[in-house]
Image 1 (cartoon, rainbow, N blue to C red):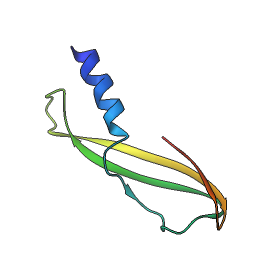
Image 2 (cartoon, one colour; image 1 turned 180 degrees about the horizontal axis):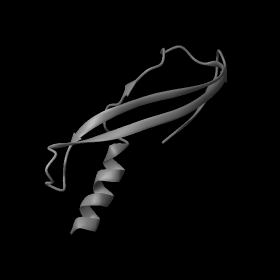
Image 3 (cartoon, rainbow, N blue to C red; image 1 turned 45 degrees about the vertical axis):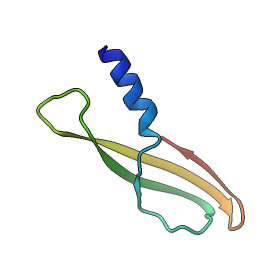
Image 4 (tube, rainbow, N blue to C red; image 1 turned 60 degrees about the vertical axis):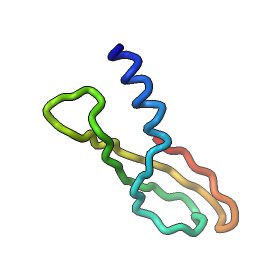
Length: 70
């Protein structure tokens, strides 16, 4: 059951809102973004929430942008 909960938490983490530290315009050149979000702890540990970090790399020409995020 814990494995299923962990897998579900990892899959749904891509659906959670993330606070990003970058402007909304398409990137010119290459750039990194760092952010995070808080979610309720599905494991019931001592902490009531978990921090999910967000790291992204974007490259573009000002019109089109390609992203890779973790």
